[in-house]
Length: 86
Image (cartoon, rainbow, N blue to C red; front, side, top):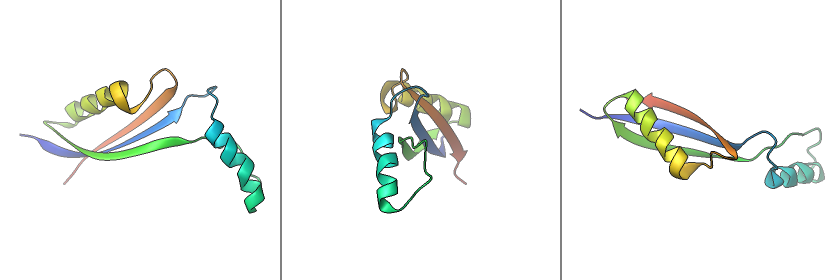
């Protein structure tokens, strides 16, 4: 029997990989009156539901999605959260 899992995936550039979007934001913030901000990094956040027999299988499916489509494992890190929907 399948269960439904709420999934959150956070994708971010690995340390040492240039982040031109983050740098642009960091440079623009002082002009908007926000000083003292540094180290801006931009990533993406994905939220979706997965049906699977158990949490381990849901996580396995999500990891495969990340490897094949949602992230570039060469330059990006991925954080995955899987929670069963009550």
